[in-house]
Amino acid sequence: MLKLENISIELKNINKEVESYQIAELIQKIDQEVLENTSVKKPSDKVVLNAIKKYLNESEKIRPLLSCWTPFDDRVAFTNSYSLFVLDKKTLPFNVAFNSDFSEDEKKKFIKENKIEKSRINEGCYPNLKNVIPNEMNQLDTFKLNVKSFLAWYKVQDKKELKNKNVLYNLGDDLEPYTVDANLLKDMITILQLEGVVCVEFYGDCKPCIIRKNAGREIGLLLPVKKY
Image (cartoon, rainbow, N blue to C red; front, side, top):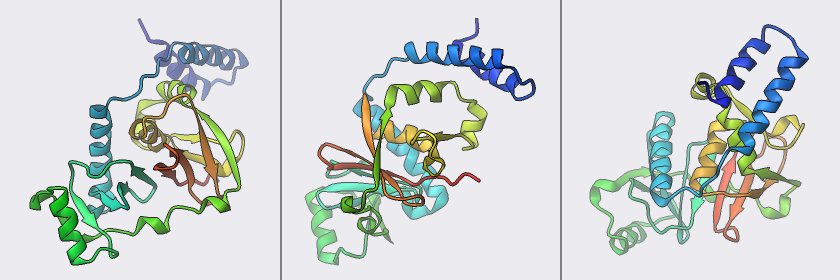
């Protein structure tokens, strides 16, 4: 027996070749059924760590240094150039790299205080991520992201297209500039352990959007993908 999400995917493939309002209506009904039957559980700490590990491993393909995390005030941060995370943790069980703001003495102190093994230390210079995060004073607009609706939508997308990173999600209704990579948004929901309806901040057509959690101590930043 085919799952509802698989039926939806098959119908979407048929609909690419045969234009039919009846098929479109059926897809809409099935997707609504998937939404109603999608349960959302807060990811466990183990699931979050596995998601971060996968994220860092994929980031290494973009630039080896990005397979590390970096200290960010009293928190940690990491990026893959397309998205960025700041988490309310002191360390992560993965390789660490420091930016140019850290003196040698500050590095040694941080390593000693947090008992970081030498094998976990990358000598490269990590990007200074503070310069990347927009100032809240420059915020242009906000939109609401329904986590459950997105996960239900994600569930019925073509798996091959997702793997090839060809699936975009429109965060701001019909505002074209605010489409984002669906996989990166899924990562953000898992790593930040997002639930319910969350606020997404916008700063401009080609500037990153921001999701803040825990009074802004945890941050997810996501660059929009231009559609032509």
